[in-house]
Image (cartoon, rainbow, N blue to C red):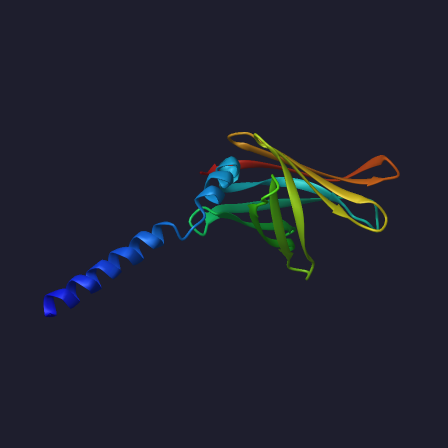
Length: 172
């Protein structure tokens, strides 16, 4: 009887372990590999248009990008500084969209947040933020060691550049 109970407990343990292997969505893991080019540590600089003065203001930027939840999502941590002060502080999570592409859910240090569709492939990605005045469009182009991101504001069919960032990979 004691041996039977021991065998049942051991069997249940192995069932639990094999179920654990399937806990994470394997299809999502496969989809997220498309974004593996993003993963790593990045640093560089850029500029953003001050909306009040219409003057370009320069900044330095770091991005720490990691797979998380057993590679079923990507966590992005970005910090921008100007004259030693933080001017941009953000966390984002990128997850697969079952209809194709990805979702990016972002949280900014100033309290703004949102969920946006991230579209593209092969190192070229775009996401859009609709506003009452027009649409903010961010475009990212990534190679093995470079990250270029530009921001345009689209209004009445016209594009107005307001942001550019150029980063280099410092760690994979």
